[in-house]
View 1 (tube, one colour):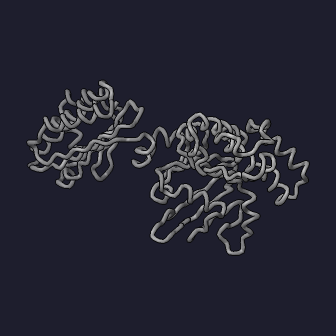
View 2 (view 1 turned 90 degrees about the vertical axis):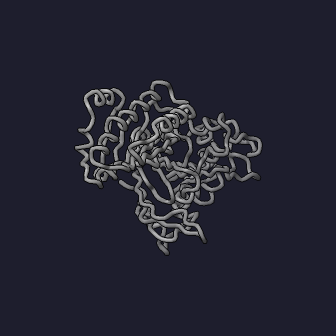
View 3 (view 1 turned 135 degrees about the horizontal axis):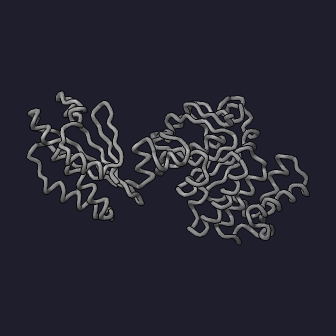
Amino acid sequence: MSIIEVKHLRKEYPGVIPLKDVNATVDEGEVISIIGPSGTGKSTFIRCLNGLETPTSGQIIVDGVDMCAPDVDLPKMRQKMGMVFQNYALFEHKNIVDNLTMAPMDLLGMSKQDAYDQAMDLLKLVGLRGKASSWPDELSGGQRQRVAIARALAMRPKILLFDEPTSALDPKMVSEVLSVITRLAEQGITMLVVTHEMRFARDASSRVFYMDQGELWESGPPEQIFENPKRKETREFIFRVHNWNWEIHSIDYDYAAMFSSLQEFCAHQFLGRRITIKCQLALEEITSSFLIPLAQEHGITDPHISYELSVGEGREEADLFIDLKHFTDSGVSLEAIAAAADDVAVQILKNVIVSGETDSSGKVHFVIG
């Protein structure tokens, strides 16, 4: 059952539109990691969910209540959502246990003793029971962020929102905080986490949202997003993809310049010898055995072949995209293109291409590996 429904959410500032048209649902107990390039509306999205930012238009329905309705009791709704910020937002003039007891006493009506007992339990949960009497400036950044998580939990929220909770921390402290969030994820708490920590997003999430240009461009389970993203932009972000592009505008193309450029690209990306050779073989056979002879046969003097080779950090495969629209526009069918090569070229390509697909517009995608 959905605990959050977002419909056509838009947020505008003068001259800037951080959120254009966001639509999403979150089921109770899900852990959603929100990833994407900086400046694409992720933090604004989280802040709109709990009313820290007022949407320009759209709906945010939380636990059956429209947060954007004019008569909504916003303070009451915020109690259902704990928020953990980048900069901890602790009260520096209060010690750690007082940071955790103040809101439950004031807003939930808890007795001082009950609030104290709960605070000590939560500090134990985040590994900081021994710091109850300390002051915020006596703690490390990782410890302060763990206190901020405990303080959010003290209000017994149904939903926890994290706005890049590790962005201000050094690598050692990052692992402290992520281990606590991962433990909470295992307890079935509904969480939305804006993060740049891809390992956390992969290992601890039930779903991943990829946001770009103010919209939710792709969502799915971690294995889909991280292993088989549907959108090119998601793939480039996940794998830190680097691209090599080349166009052929004549059947007498400069073979030496093309392959020199390809070799230089592969060297700059530190591609292994095996994958580099396979990329070269694929391009050589596709160009020399398929496409150039086919262009000559059909009298196409400018074949306008567009290649894009994409490689990502840590991958043992490469993606080759070929735009053959000029061929199809000239009346050459995709079937004729596929049948153009001799048996030797076909066998070579079978040894270097893992998979391939073609769409109706004449764009081909091969995975080389």
